[in-house]
Length: 78
Image (cartoon, rainbow, N blue to C red):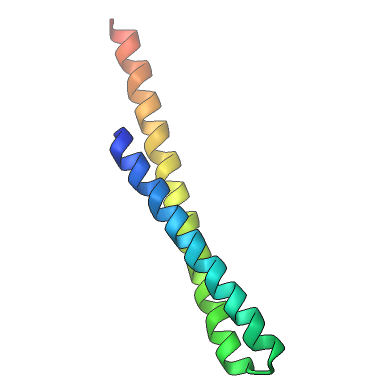
């Protein structure tokens, strides 16, 4: 995984996190106002944002491990 790809993944995770936080905040406000159907939908969307963040983290970790493994193999070959 290149440094640029890793940076892109980190930016994507940051953006998803910020969006999830905004959705959660709005859902809590709607929940407090008694607008339960609207709040439920926003809670669901915030949860989906969390799932996407987890998938990106797994991808970043897998890419880092692959890069680390290839670096070790290169060092062994020298």
